[in-house]
Length: 75
Image (cartoon, rainbow, N blue to C red; front, side, top):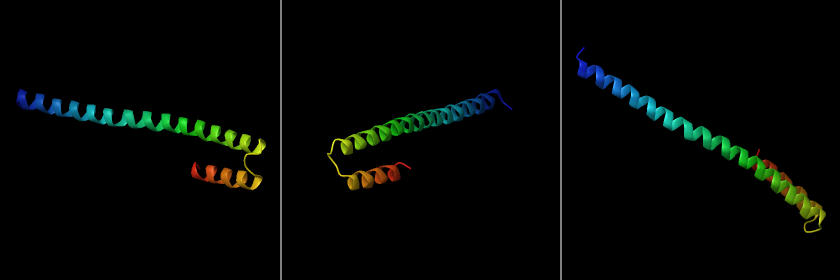
């Protein structure tokens, strides 16, 4: 095998590895951080919903309906 072909094959492998790494790292980071933020957001929404019910802003029926919808949406 000539040195030029060897260098070319090495460069192609290195490029494929780099592309694979770049494709996986951001996807993993985005998934995990958005998942964590989503869970915190749902918890905050549930707390806000409960406070609205306790403060008399919404009825018990509205509270139950909105709570079920929020949980179902994020399940």
